[in-house]
Each structure stands twice: as C-alpha cells, then as structure tokens.
Amino acid sequence: MTGQSQDTSRFEISTVAQDGRQVIIPEGELDLSTVPLLEQRLNQALPAGDAMLDLSRVSFIDSTGIALLVSISATAREHGWHLKLRDPSPQVERLIKLTGVTELLGSPGE
Amino acid sequence: MLSAAPWERHVLADPPTVIPTLRRELVDYARFLGASAETCDAIALAVSEALTNVVQHAYVGQEPGPIIVEALLERRNQLLLRVSDEGQGPTPRADSPGLGLGLGVMAQTADDFNISNREDNRGTVVTLRFSLPNRDPISQGPAATRNVDPTVQIR
Image (tube, rainbow over the protein chains, first blue to last red):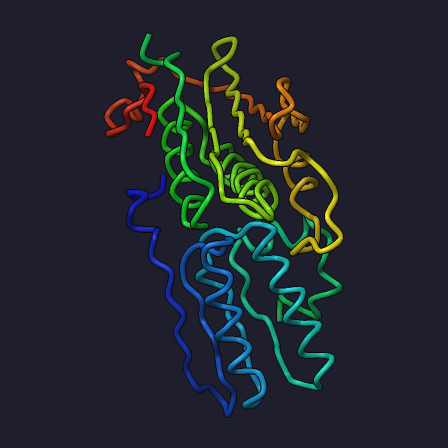
C-alpha cells in the first residue's frame, strides 16, 4: 500500500552532471499540474548540451505526461539536440506501452 | 451504510492542481471500499484523464465552471465514477493540446467507459466503472482504519 496521499503532492526536478551530460530527474506525479514545470526545465536544458531524462522517480503519469515525452523527443530530434530517456518507473513504462508511443520516444529503456 | 455512501465533490475546473487533489481523494475512497492496489492505479489514471479533459476542454473561451465528481458502489463490488462538467460538450478541437490519448487510456483502463452529452445538454459526462472483485466488508478490512470521510461534501 502507498503512504499518505499528501506526501505525494510534492513534485521536484533535480539536475545532476554525469559523464559530461545533464541528468534531469523529475520526482513525483506528472500530470497537467506539473508537466509545465518539467517542460520548462527541459526546454532550458536541451539547447545547453547532451541531456538524460531519468524517469525512475515518476510515481504517477497520465497521457499529459506522455504527450510531453513525445513532444520533447520530437523537438530534440528536430533541433539535433541529444536527449535520452532512461529508467522509466513501472508506471511510466506501463503507460508508454498502453499508449503505443514507444517508437516515438527512441529507447526509453536504455 | 458506510460502505455504500456516495462520494461527491463540486470544484472549480481551475487551477490544474484540482486534478491531483481529486485523484488522490478518489483513490483513497476506492481503497477504503477495498479496491486492490492495481485497481487503485487504474482508477488514478482514468480519473486523471477525465479531469484533465474537463480542465483543458470544457470551458475553452469562457470562465472556468465546475467539475462534478461522483463515486458510489454499485452491486456491492463495482465502483461507479462519474466526472461531469457544465461546459461546451464533447466537441473536437483542432487546437487540442496533447495527443488525444486520454479517451483511449480511459477505455483501456476502466472496465466500462462512456462519454456523452449530459442529459440536460449542459456539458459532458464521463462514466467509468471498475470491478472490485475482492472487496472485503468495510468493517473487516484494514482500510477501515484510514481517515476517509465518504459522506457527501459539496464545496
């Protein structure tokens, strides 16, 4: 069972440098109320160099979050920016499969 | 009966933080009724999609109106969730944000899914049903100790 619901209202984005690459780590629930925060962070980070989006700490995601992953992946390809998705949480992995967008995201499992 | 008491909220469809707030409250209610962790995940996802549709689409070009969320137990082991609004009804939008995945997610996640105009033609109603096959009597389940108020509360 999950813990008290109030604890999951937090949404944080941390960024760490790893092997010369920015690793962006959103933590918490990704929905319409938090997607703009992650979108803003990614739009800041991507032009600055190689980036990795670590999805291991996303505890909830809905189609709004999936739409962001698809659109930011497309934007990165369009501009020649390097973005990789890694370690999707079970919730993220499940919805990627359910929505059939795996190919649009590159290789989220890497 | 406590277990059959319907749950209802009327809230303004703005700001988007109403989505996680209502989602968590509904999942708490479902868990209180004995929904499994897997069913709670499915409910969270489907409800999030329904609420997002209201926030993004129902009141475009007008002041945000209400989201009405109702939940009740049907036939002892089926949870009925109804998300309705008083907006412009389920109409296609050429400028729709997102990928249009929400309806498909609801259809695949819920055991039963329906979206239609409200009977009074004032907005949209989404109906979702989830089976609670292993539902324990409330008085015997560990969920009974959770601090959840299933009584009607309109705000």
